[in-house]
Image (tube, rainbow, N blue to C red):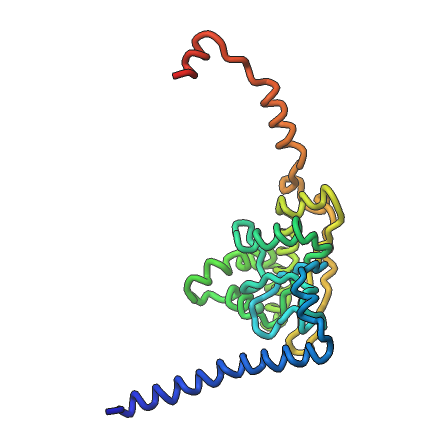
Length: 252
Ligand code: ZN
């Protein structure tokens, strides 16, 4: 016997199924439309990718990289997380960064934040949300570092928007501090950019924080790429030959 509760659950599940199915239907329309425009579209894409750009953006559903830049599949390598952060211990981001820089050899890395970012607004409050509090911690550090400028902005929305910009600038700096980016700079050109997208007008603002070389960052964050190789060579050449008791010890 079906109770009212079970009946409601069945209706709900059916609705959810329908919503899920609409994505599959949407995909079929997408694939058919692309093939109508270019019968070789997927065949060409399946050969491989060579995008010029790595995009580090927010997970927010309203900031899709390809759509807001009017680009197609294959043009942008994408990494997204809450509030578009570049954390130097984030193995997910570092793996994406290394692959994009070392193997795909992207020419530009774009950190794109957006005004009205929930992650930024949450970090500006004292509300405890859960695990995400830890993820957003570095935004609080950026706030703290720029507190005088931020508290001078009377309007709370404008203050949050300014923190969106300051955070993007900080993330671009964080990229410049990675050994992955500096390794690339030792060999070739690689440009880092900071942008903020406006949800209310659909436009991207370029913050003009361009880093092209390790000299753009404080000395303590610069890596001497030749040093580890030299140190290894010196260590190998200075290796003393084992003789006498030392050699005997080694044999045991
Ligand atoms: Zn966001």
